[in-house]
View 1 (cartoon, rainbow, N blue to C red):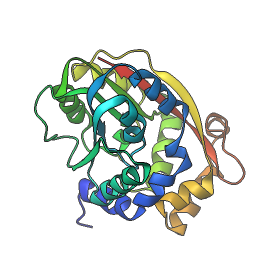
View 2 (spheres, helix red, strand yellow; view 1 turned 90 degrees about the vertical axis):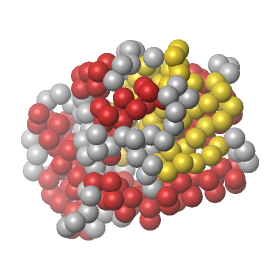
View 3 (cartoon, rainbow, N blue to C red; view 1 turned 60 degrees about the vertical axis):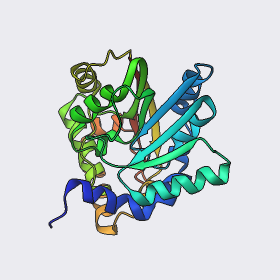
View 4 (cartoon, helix red, strand yellow; view 1 turned 135 degrees about the horizontal axis):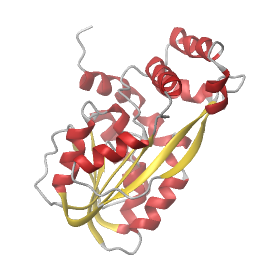
Length: 252
């Protein structure tokens, strides 16, 4: 009952670090291909992976940059990323632990900043984005990749509810409109978001976070009673699997 939002994130993800390194949903995707294509040939000297999770952004960037720092709140996650980097023979990746809202880096110290599937766990996204802007060099670029929430309140409420039932460290999925506003307020000039859909297979989605059965059953019970508009938008299947909207946004 006395856990903070930050301690809950560490508690949730620490024991599950290895699972996120090997998770197919996180280890592959068109957004990672987009990221590699963006970084390739640009001669980026120094890159930062904010909320690195299983390290897949760092692993994608490593062949195309001088150095990449995988940054995360969870020490266990960082240890898993470092071990995987060693296994893959990646020598230009280092790890650093801390809060995204208070980055321990000097102003204008990175050529590129990226984050993927992490911001919906951040306690203060506007502050974290200001920090990302601060550590980015003049002329540097950033890429933000995450699930985004529908504008319709009914659909938004369903998404936030199932996310929280699965993982109590979830804070919020933001809409594209909210993302654009937050990026601009932080000093970025965002480009047009690239939208995608990802299917979440229910059993692996639940297993990855080791969601207690009572909460997994609550998700299924909710799916069985929501209006047809929710079923249609999220393409809810009989076994509980469903699809979500994701985006990637380049920003300067």
